Image (cartoon, rainbow, N blue to C red; front, side, top):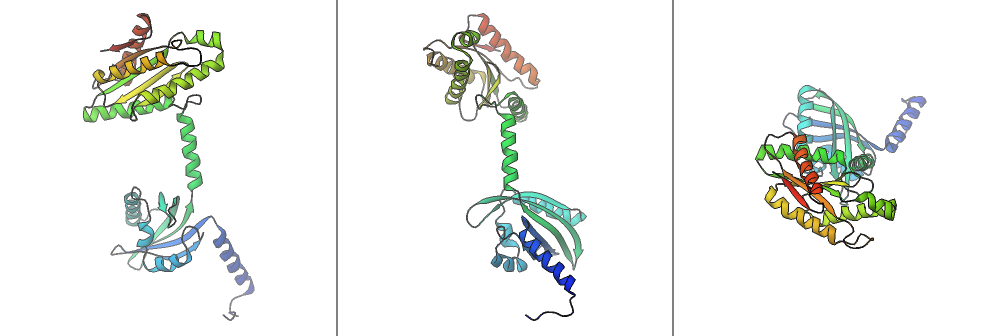
Length: 304
């Protein structure tokens, strides 16, 4: 193609720099047009070829449906609602969604775009960024903040969040909910006799036992020290009691590396009462735990 002598050299240089920068940014610059009839297309796409390949760009210039078909089914309604709100109010579009790649990989995409009226429709000017690594890092940080470092169970913070969620569900649906509070008997003696490293191993083994003995839908957590909690959704006290007994017997029969029968646990259980505050629910299970200790340990006591 012959050079255009009408373009100044400095302008050519700026255009070349812009082209180079656009090709190297970790995302895509785009224009998205939605007609009055609702048809979507991408008049302009430039940037990261890993998100949209060259052949797809020509296709998307006429019909954007191919790109929207690759959006995760869970995110698609939210994205379309966000596009609708942005078009009606001419406010910026800001959204994150999962995009299925042709190779089967799923990437997290962040979109920021500014709309304007144009030719009987709405035209957005925006930027798409692949934020998969950032999303994975944030998920890892959330997991760390919700997990007990030693046992890998949920920590107190996570348990309280889940307890609030399950109480809310129980109130809405009238479904039963039970709570176990478990405390190892004479754990200080284990640490004093066998050392803190062995004591930590006992706690790790106990965490595995809890997860093995309880159901997949139950939530096990370490509250601190040798105290644990198990939250049992959709479970009345009559079903919680045999589960707690099974766990107590499994602990008493397990060899934690210091001899069978050397480690036992006391367990207090309670069933949620409709309208009861969270702390009152916990307090009743704690009273059951205290009673189990007072009655000789290595037993389950329910608080009606």
